[in-house]
Length: 171
Image (cartoon, rainbow, N blue to C red; front, side, top):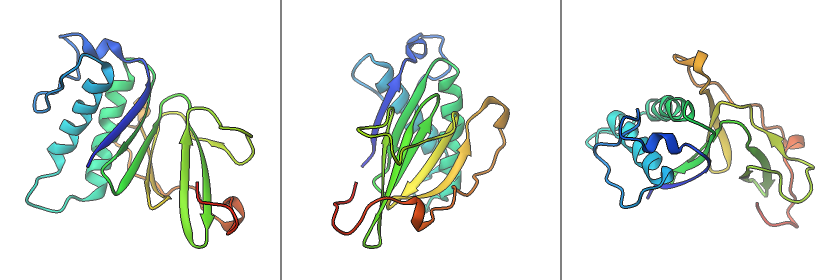
């Protein structure tokens, strides 16, 4: 039920002496994408015991900390989902546009604005955003100086900041 995509170049983590060697997750290829995905899953598993319900903040913080480590090796923008939450890490560039259509919220994320730039907002570099059902739940800093930062509330989603109408489909 996990999905992952990234852009950037963190090939340095493929080196045997790298910081980010996954031990519990085995990948079949030799790409930085596979290794970073396995590494993130490994770090999440450390705070998500199978026999209990995870506390969202624990695994969000684990992903933020792992993102900081990987991003030290190069540009690392990514999207990660557990099927309920969507986590978006903006290392150097990531944009979002939100829509609210008939009480349904949605978010579209891209490394560059698609089509017209109207409505697209850049995410702050070194930020991990957490979304559920199209709404931003939390924002965590992944900057080197934010090692012990707690999740903060996302920018207010006022109706006048959201795009879309009942005549248009959801993003």
